[in-house]
Structure formats: structure tokens, C-alpha cells
Image (cartoon, rainbow, N blue to C red; front, side, top):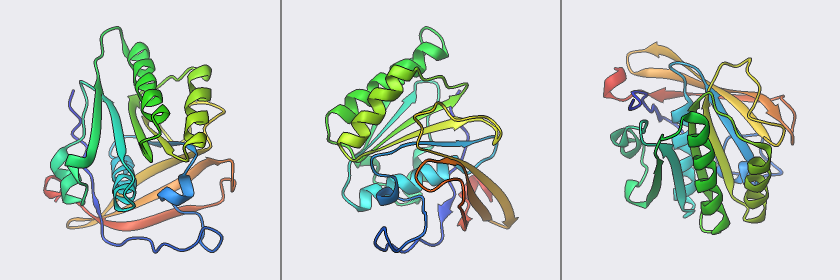
Length: 214
């Protein structure tokens, strides 16, 4: 099924300061070389934060790849409305032929090849529900992200009380969206696990919803 989730566009951007001077933020410099899981359930803000990171990478001239399944895809006009250059976004669509577990494995293998090339600053794997990722694959993906100083971002659909994909996930954050008024939403991130800083931070911002959410 094609995803009907929408991306809500950011009204403000977080200012960029040297890493030693800034608090924890969900941005490319903060996440470089890390295995990150971004999760949410229902009408969440997962795509909003994922697309924000894609835009951040593109503004820094870092190539981005998005690995998804053939039965699920983001809504391109929403990404374009958020400022993403769709012509510069590499999208890999993996067929679901032998069930979701096999499909998730193929997604991870595709991401491994992309990271191994050293050409991408951000690789997104849109797993969706019931994601399973074997430990050997996690090890290889993390090693390649660290080697090439790239961000590996896995998107999963799960509740805030569900553990991360595995022990090698460096940062696990849960994204939520709350309607405020008219076309305004509050999007927030809450850290479930952060191996560098500990689960001690969160962030939120007011965003603008697309036409389908107004």
C-alpha cells in the first residue's frame, strides 16, 4: 500500500554552531558516522524529521539515498514543498517477493552497497512495520557508516515503548505530531536511547502542514 503519510514543513531551522558549543540536535553533523533509528506510530512526525535531515544533507552538498519497498513510498510533492531536490535524491525500491523479513534484509543489503561506495552522506532505510535486522548486517552497516562518516537512518513504525532494532543502534528517537490550529502542528522528538549523550534531551518545533492536512 502506498503511504498516505504527509510531511509537515519546518517553519524555522535550527541555527548551526560548532559541535562543542551546541546542544544535542537532530542534524547531519550531530549524526555523522552513527546508526540512527527514527520511529513513530500512527500520525507521527517520522517523515517530517527524516525529510528535514535529507534537506540538511542536500544543503551541505551531501548525496542522499532513500531505500524503500515497492508497496510503500513517500509523497514526492510534499518533499518538493519542503525544499528537497527530488532530482538529486536517489530512491531504491525493493520488491516484496518473499515476505517482509526477506524484504527488510534486501533493503539492508541495498543500503550496505550504497554506504560501501562512500558516495553518500545520508542513507535512509524506510522499513515501516515489524522491522527485523540481523546482527551481522547491523555490524556491517554501522562499520561502513563510521568508515565514511555517513548517517544511516532507519525509519520504523512502532510505539515509544518498543525497543530499538538492536544493540548497535547508536541513537533511537521517537517522533510525534500534535495538531495546534489551522495548518500548524507541533512536531517533537524524544530520545529513547543515545549512546553518546544518554536519553537526556528532546526537541520540538512548530511546523506547517501540507494541503492534505489543512
